[in-house]
Length: 172
Image (cartoon, rainbow, N blue to C red; front, side, top):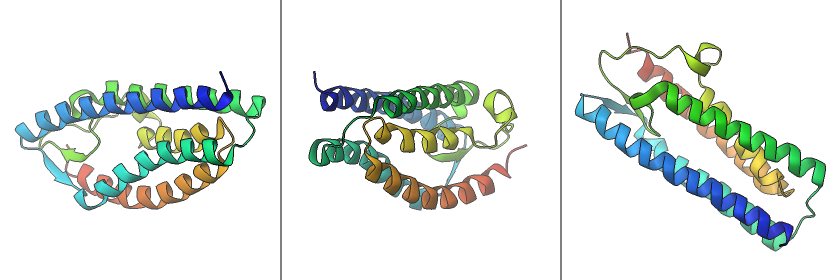
């Protein structure tokens, strides 16, 4: 199988992981809203969905159209970062439990989570997103997608973090 085909399998696997995340997110968002949760930052959410979808599609298009050579040392090191980012993301999901979802929903009276990766980093899930967004395309030297996603994600995160930090001030 060609390196492009292997990369496609990797991107599809990440896409399936994202579908699993969305299932967990929908369940948890419904749980939060049923308990009086208040959503903040709705305006940037559609852009986030498009950007994250664009990461996967863009990486595949760049690899299949531009046909960059996969550099083994880059590929393996970036693949390790992708795996570590996935691990961090699911550690965040497990730590937050029912409070985790892809939206910014705060349940009144809920305590702010300070365990797990939140003990060391205020927003570890966004660290995972940033690492994955850079590393996934670079597994197959798709540097254009890596740079564009990273720049746009930085702009998005500036907005997202303001909304999330403001919402978290309402927690006990």
